[in-house]
Image 1 (cartoon, rainbow, N blue to C red):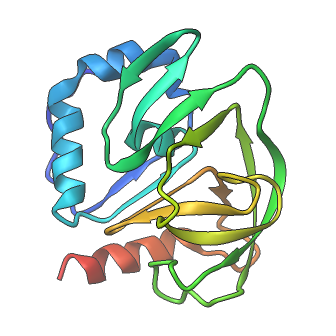
Image 2 (image 1 turned 90 degrees about the vertical axis):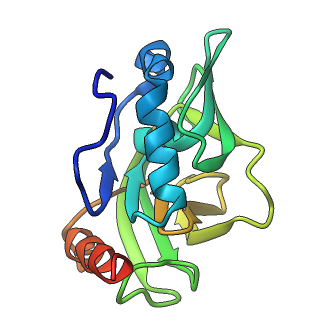
Length: 177
């Protein structure tokens, strides 16, 4: 909310939360939003989940107000009054999944809890997961891949064979070479 610049980092992890509650403050921090957008466009690896996905989108609309966000993901977020995704999810990795060890059809167990949906996501978007149980972005897919960024509504767990922290670090190391 207050830092005007990123520290010197090799990758970015944008965790979950409820950015709509701080949308005006996030929008007001234009220098940081612009730096993040520029660094991601230049290839800095990033992983964002749920609230992080929302922050990396173009805008968030909630309670009659729309606020500009980072703009790294070519979609707008619309926050509703009821959960659009809630509970445990079962996903399958697609060929678009960017991390090392990705395997078409590999099953991932995780969870989601979001009141929002993406609007205007291009049909040509690369998506890292097929939804087998849950909602994700649209009831069919989750995990927008843009450059070296993976942003998803799903909150991954580091258990059950999904060692996402190690995979993300390995991806960040390989992408920065």
